Picture 1 (cartoon, protein in one colour):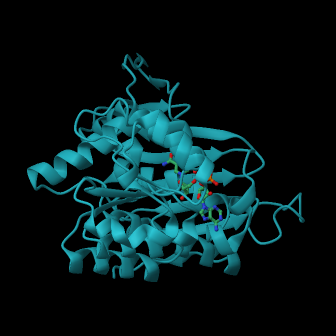
Picture 2: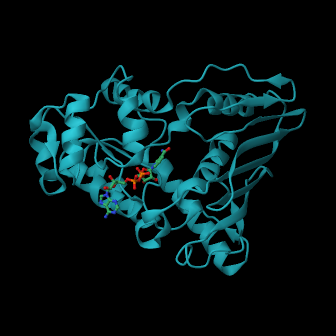
Length: 324
Ligand code: NAD
């Protein structure tokens, strides 16, 4: 695990105590204090503890098979490429990178090195979101007509407020879940987007990034997705309107506490540890020599949509997305 910040500390580390097919073999951190603390907590041998300067020597460590990049967004590209050059499979946190161009370089590097690249899209393993995918795919309520999704939080700070490090604002961080949900509900790529930036109430805090954003995604079968994201207003839902009913989850994008409802009543679903399921699936994909359901290419597609949303936000016009 590279980068022992809040997501690693609060979610991924604890999840690795529950995984069955992988475990926390090693860590990379710039902080001696953290290296010591994690070493003790996870019983990691000294030979598997790295600082950033020593990162590339992981190539000689056969005890490490996967490198999980959990760094600020602008650092993803460098560390994914270096991980691939060390001959290790890679999981990279979302968003895969800050631009499509960067995603392409990362995907090409992993392909060249013969290693697998996946994105930390944990919701593809979450039973509530899987149920939403299933209801849409099986047309349980008829054809999907309309999607609405929102994700917003008020706790963003530090590098997340700096475009240089984050690549953008709430769209890159939390809005990306709505972008990704549009795909797993429709199984399609949007053909056009139309976005509008929300009013910037705190011009100092949000000097380099948007504070909030609403956008529409149009799919080739006529389905539309109305989405919003924000760093100043809470939001967390995914709702689908279909011909003969509706289904929704709210909260939909959290680590836990998800709740689902349909026009027929409550969803009765047992929650699981999303991150443990995500990491176990990647380990099994490597062992079984199969592809991952959340490959780098998916992260790239989301970045392509995000770039179109930002283009529309700036121009105020509907932006078409073409296949490339
Ligand atoms: P964080 O700020 O808590 O941690 C970032 C880590 O990177 C820290 O340990 C920090 O020391 C280290 N770092 C190294 N160089 C740095 C630099 N130049 N500037 C700042 N930090 C530096 O962030 P986080 O919330 O853990 O997020 C890390 C990544 O994980 C992001 O890409 C984020 O989008 C992603 N994330 C994903 C989820 C999810 O649900 N999949 C949830 C939270 C975060």
